[in-house]
Amino acid sequence: MKKLLLLAVLGSAVLTASAQDNQFAPKKGSFSTEIQFAPFSGTKIFSNGGVLQARYFCTSKDAFVVELGLAGTNDKDVPNGDQSNTFSSNYDGTFQLNLGYQRHFYTYKRLDLYAGGKIGYIHNFKAQKEQADENNWDWNNEGTGNGFSLYATTGFDFYVYKGLYLGAELNVGFKDVIKSGATYKYKEDGVLTELKTKVGGHSFKGGFDVNPLIRLGWTF
Image 1: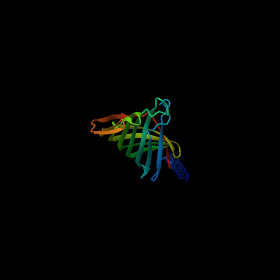
Image 2 (image 1 turned 180 degrees about the vertical axis):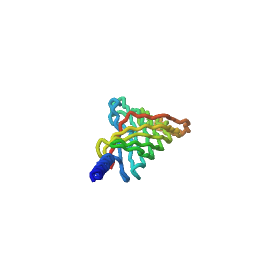
Image 3 (image 1 turned 135 degrees about the vertical axis):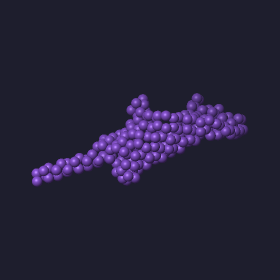
Image 4 (image 1 turned 90 degrees about the horizontal axis):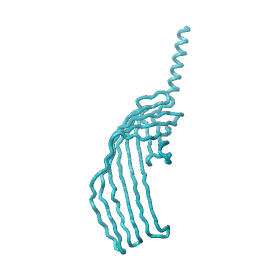
């Protein structure tokens, strides 16, 4: 009788410990979103390339990932002050949409390991303008292009609190952006001229993509 009671107590303790270990793991129907923290980037603290990531767990082990990104810079130089029509400007931006899958293959207490992959669409857009006055300027969008990316991913989530996790990720794969045609516009003494050209070439980047980022996310 004492042995049976002892076995029952031990079994209850094991089940309780397992339940406590699994309370941090994502479950079927869970949804998460995250930002990325870059502590070694100098003056920039939060940096995720303008990408918002969301995950949906269709099972406790399988998650679908959607990443939507929009990032850019817009620089304008007015040498004679705000009242002058003379200026130079440069805009450089990127839009991206990634779809991915993750298999969360190992969970122990607060640690959750996963592996998967993602494929994405990339659109680079650029514009440059040099203006002497309203009747004399030139503009072009050389550097605009479309491409795609393909990466295998692996990483981990460490739950510091129920629903709140830190993580890191390693990607291996490539991205390739093919330059599209460019448009050049010139206005001289009020006369506008437009020229369109077919710009060739592409920008390829492959290999391991290791970013010194800590992922900070919430699982609902």
